Length: 468
Image (cartoon, rainbow, N blue to C red; front, side):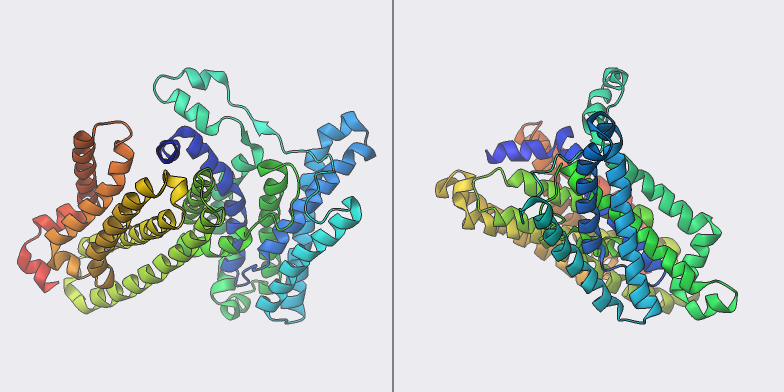
């Protein structure tokens, strides 16, 4: 069974599930990015998503009574979408009124919005359905799914793979990834985007040149409510077809961390959302094993903590590298410091993935029956723990002090190649025998290390590396 889970992870169906589960993270993450750029981060996204999800379900269900069954089935999903997004924007406007107009603390006002979204949806749901858990008694509708043309499936080699990944995805998933480009264009190619970023970076200077900071921040909150509302709608009308109590399950809070990991850039935010989507989809796959349900449910939140640790470590690395670069003075070598930055990121990521491997080893020991029983699970857990601890140990020195990379360039190459090679080996072993898979994994891992800048350090004179 464990082998089946590993094989399913490296499949087109798994990639399709990543896109699907990343959608309700990506949309509110873009909302958090926009409001954060304006200096008023919408921390109430969790309550906003819940409100939108519940409103969309209720309106789509009752639209069949208001307009008749035939017409309701056609307009109901879109009416529910519009109502849910409108409710989310009203909550964002309420947050802006409390914080910007009444000068309430942003954190406390956002906390109130989250409590209102969680408790209010349950109270109204009980009045409408008599159930505090879900709206299964309501005939709610779903947002349409987009079917790709069959001709794509006929394209040689890549056609079937692309078709399986993107076919039958919710329209909300397509909207979510299109919104990455829309938000980028708005922030960096429009006057409003310039005003929004100026309002967040230096509101006093923005006001001095005539930028309406207060109005701009209200607009940023409304946009964040719009995007958060779309994410909530996807949860109840795309990801599922009903509303469940607290169904967002912390995604609104995860969305607050995603822009930080994406360097406060829409493209980086999209990539970070896919990473969280990967761990969310992984939790679903692992949940098929005979293990306590709490273990796979922990994975997305462990990933969030680890991502924040990576962000903190990388920020610390960047500050240290900037200081070292400034000390270099007139002899500044831009390529050298860019290579050092890229390789330090690689070592940070490999060390953190190794720590996740330690968690997996502990999980196997805690629930051996899900992995073939103690006879199979214990050796597997021991292998995970030993390998993960060793991989973390060989990468940690370069994580603590990035300047060790050029001083110990071959050790950096060995650490990067072995650590990355182990992870690639898990993938290649599904298609090749052990020895060819090992050789291919190590060769590709070393190639990645070289492309990230290892080639530059290896051909640079040792004396110049020491001086740097």
